[in-house]
Length: 304
Ligand code: GDP
Image (cartoon, rainbow, N blue to C red):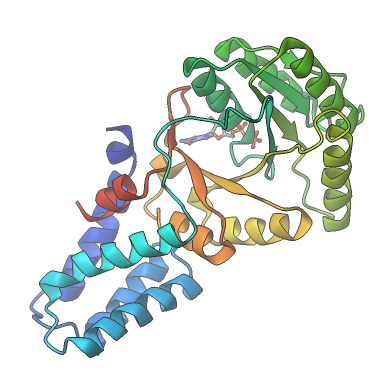
């Protein structure tokens, strides 16, 4: 329900434009495809992914010359679902972590302001609700506010947090967090990291060091590197994905603020372009406003 409400704007925008583009036309012709291309790009699907979708639809049109515009919706849904399936995006339905990895270590990356702290807090809450024990690590030691904010979320979700003073070594905080988690026999560890993008080499070095030091405690950590992106920033989100994937191996994405954007297509484009699944979406500021990304629900909300 929240997703539907949250994506209301995307819905009217995408579906409304699509309906307009095919109005009065019975066949999918070049003009319809041109319009569709424009709408997809305007919905932040991104140029590469848009062209991929258009090509696939063209191939189907070539096979079936009389393809009607009434079938375009269905075909578009199929192609989008197909794209997301290729990288196993939106296959999960619950907040789960693999039980054979204990603690399951999630390293969270992303630039300031995208909703990193909020998403960590919401995740901690959800995992705890699912019966898991969670430990947070405040390894964004660059900003005092980051540590304070994470503490507030730890209190809200009622999970322990490991922190040091501002300016301390992030790798040291990560190390302490993992040690504490192992001692407590915790199920999930979520490590916040600093999101400074002004120097790619620094970012890469810092994240590499945090990883290396974590592996002294849990040899195959981190099990997940979760990049947080602000869904309302369109091209910026693509650019940040590019920078972070160049600096470290990102294994999953969380796209936030989809409640406030008319362009949810960023979810489709980013997961396709970077071949990384979107695992979570943020649909509001509250603790409950995080969802496990489900491709069918998402596509439904686009086309309803
Ligand atoms: P950080 O700097 O990346 O840690 O960002 P924060 O977690 O502090 O979030 C920045 C702002 O975005 C805060 O005002 C959050 O309440 C807001 N925010 C985070 N996620 C969402 C979301 O899914 N929807 C909306 N509307 N706001 C969000």
